[in-house]
Amino acid sequence: MSVEKTKLGVSRKTDRETADRLSHDEGGRERGNDAASRTEGETPSANKAGASGRSRSRWLRALRIILRICVVPVLFLIALCGGLYIGYVVLGNGSADDVFDWTTWQHMYDLIFADS
Image 1: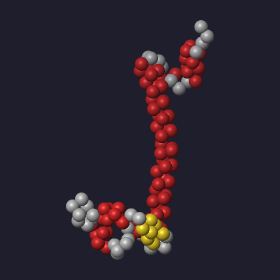
Image 2: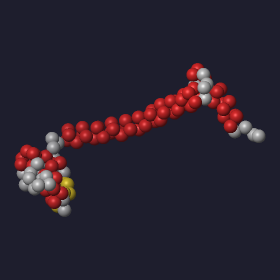
Image 3: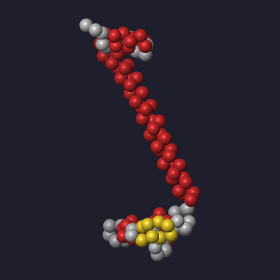
Image 4: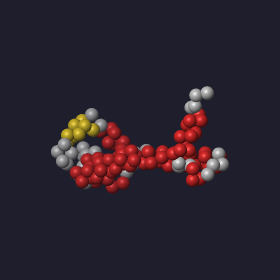
């Protein structure tokens, strides 16, 4: 492990072997023009465009997290509504209008959990 300074002056710990492994393919050849254009001691991540690239990746990561948080409950609700519809109309031969009526499900709850 060594400590290197990036273009922005931030200290970063890097593993030289990992950097060499990333810059060479399995046959030992250098990958693309990125490896040839780097100066000695620079890692692949230090050769990026700077702060704008980092802030864009942070926003992209935040957007992905927000979408995951929002999309999963929405998909759950769609699956729940689809399951209610299929179970009540297709399998139970009920009316499609009654699927989303609160009294229908209250009646089913009372039938299932009634004191007998």
